[in-house]
Every structure is written in structure tokens, then in C-alpha cells.
Amino acid sequence: MSITQVSISKEVNKMHQRLADKCPECASKNLVHDYDTGETICGDCGLVLYEQMLDKGPEWRAFTQEEKASKSRVGMPTSYSIHDKGLSTTISQVDRDAFGRKLPLSTRLQMWRLRKWQIRSRVHSSIDRNLAQAMAELERLSGKVSISPPIKEKAAIIYRKALDKSLVRGRSINAVAAAALYAACRKSGSPRTLREIAEASLVDKKDVARCYRLLLQELDFHMPISDPLTYVSKIAEKNGVSGKTQGAAIAILREARRKRFSAGKDPMGMAAAALYIACLQNNAKITQKDIAEAAGVTEVTVRNRYKALKKQLNLETPDPRAHF
Image (cartoon, rainbow, N blue to C red; front, side, top):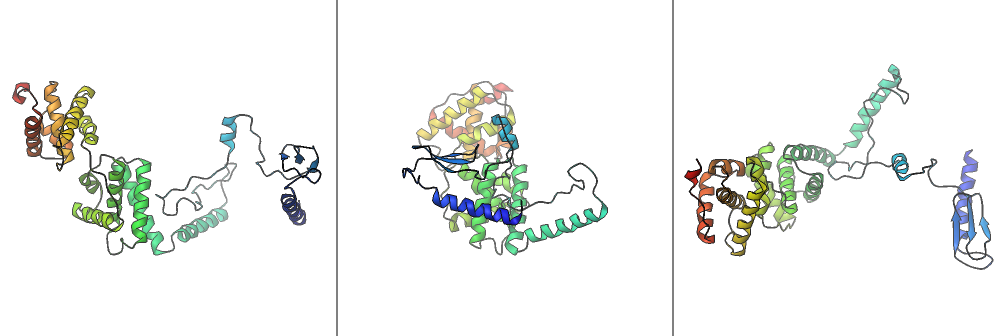
């Protein structure tokens, strides 16, 4: 089809779209578009308004839903965790054509030059370079501390907001990225502590905490209070504690929350102490040292919370020395 024919077809389609508002015979607006025959028919009087219309659908046919899904050609969804949101074109490193034949040397050199300039064009400003480094750090941190993709997307959105408000200027990109990831974990209720994210990052814990407080202040975030219940399964899995014992620890924490004893206490320490009490009640051989190492707190913290819970909730536990 020539360029003239294509332009004429486009003009005809535009004219059809303008005119096909109602039937010229009965003035009905009940028009039926039959894409198989390329006709527009009035649903009331049966008059054929137009015929040989252009089909704007795909050129392939699918007879099942699986075949339709396999033939659909769509790109990847936009992602905030990619510095360009995944909208740019990527020239791969494959040096073969569609038939698997090796490309000649001149074509490979041309593709190499195109790939180099395409990468340079993607990151051409300071903001793009900043985002590229920050999103790479978020990807590394998420893989190291096992963060799910939705939480990583929230962290990327928080970092982009901080970048728009010029909060990153003069500060470490890695520190702000780690703080954004910790803020996303807090908002999502994911059991990740600041110490874990700081250890996975290449930045000191104090710097991450300072950037986190800055994000809370400047972006006006309202973080939910950490619930000790979310940390029970995390501590239990590291020590191989059974589900029955975990349920008993959760019941202890709920009773402590009902009596307002857990207010103001470190949630990780409360979860560790409740799990230790549940282990004693269910004759599970586990020491305070094991619980403290899994929770990332000291044995003194576990011991103090253990004694306080026993006193406040009137819990009966066997002597820990009887198990060893």
C-alpha cells in the first residue's frame, strides 16, 4: 500500500468516525460495528452505513485464552524501582539475527556504537545518574535482606519524593536509599529492623537513622507503631521453634497489649521474651542466648522482659535450669 493510499484510508476513517454518530434513515444511535465483515450497521432498521472499514485489531488470530495471552505483544509494566521506570529501549548483547546466524563484523560494530550511545542517552542528567545509582543500591539491599517487590516499589517512590525535595543533596545516596527502604518496611509492617538494613548497607547505622528521621520530618510520614507480633515468627524460624509454641507466644503478647504493658517497650525484646516464656511452657529446649542472638538484642534485655512479663501477667513457668 502506497503512502497516498494510507493517507486516504486515514481520512476516510476519520470521516466515518465523525459521521457514524446516528443512522441517516431512522436517526437511531444504536450502531453495530462488525469487525469480521468491516461493516457498520444500524441496529434498528438494518441499514449498512459503511463497509470495508479498516481493522484496528491485531493481525493474528487466537482461538483460546492461552493462545491469546501468548501472542499478546505488550511491554513490561512501569516500575518506579528502575531509574527510567522501564520505559526506555534496551539493546541486548546478542550478536545474532532472528534466524540465529552470526552478524557480520561491521553490523556488530554498529550495534556496539548504538548500544553505547543509547546507554549514554538514558543517563544524561545529574538526576538520572542519581536515580540510577540509588535504584541499583535499592535492588542490592532488597535482595540482601529479602524484601518483596511491592515494598521495594514503595521505597523507590519514597526516594523519588526525597529527590524532588532536594533532600539527597549533600548526603550519601546509599544512606538515603537505605532509609527509604526502612521507611517502606515500617509502613508495610515488614519485620525488618534498622540494624539489619544498616548492616546490609555500606553506610553506618547512625547515618541511616539520621536520614530516616529527615524523611519522616520533611515528607510528613506517619509511621505505625511496631507490633511485637510481627517479629515472633522471624525469631522462631531462626531457632526452629514449633508453630504451637509460636501461638503461645502470640497469646502472651496479646495479653500484654490488652493490659498496656507493652507500650513503650522495644518490640523485638518483647517478642523475644514472650517466645522464651512460651518455649519454657512447652518444654522446648532453647536458651536465652539463642533467643537473644536470633532477635538481635542482648541477653539482659531478654531476661528483664522475661521477668517483667511473668510478674505483670502472673505467668507460671518451670525453672529454666531444669531443661539443661
